[in-house]
Image (cartoon, rainbow, N blue to C red; front, side, top):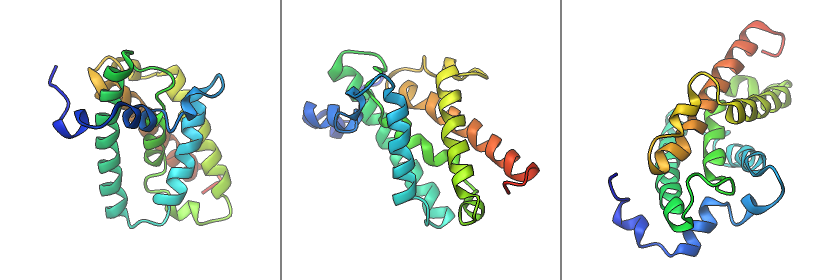
Length: 169
């Protein structure tokens, strides 16, 4: 396995652990992934909601790259493979759920789409259907983040279908 980039290896361990656990949020309660997903909704609302589509995708790519590096280094520093308290991956994946849905999110049914997005993401992240579970076996931070990205993309497809074929849209 290729070593993590020098810039991530030089960060102090408390920074890596705090970033990967969202400042300790991942240690609270019995459902850390759900807390990470709720943080992801806040992350999406504050940083992605009003972005132009090109900026949305560029910022998303940058945050996913950073999450892969931080989570990969976090695994090493915590001496655990994809520990449950590491919830940065859930947070950064949530904006993927809502790609191309801004036209609906500006309307009166926005809360329904956001709630459905959250619930579907949690279901797909927990159950890992459609081969999503195999992505988790990728080495390092790629494996930590890839299954959440896949769950978010499946959620996005489902939301687009719901919007297209139900009164929600």
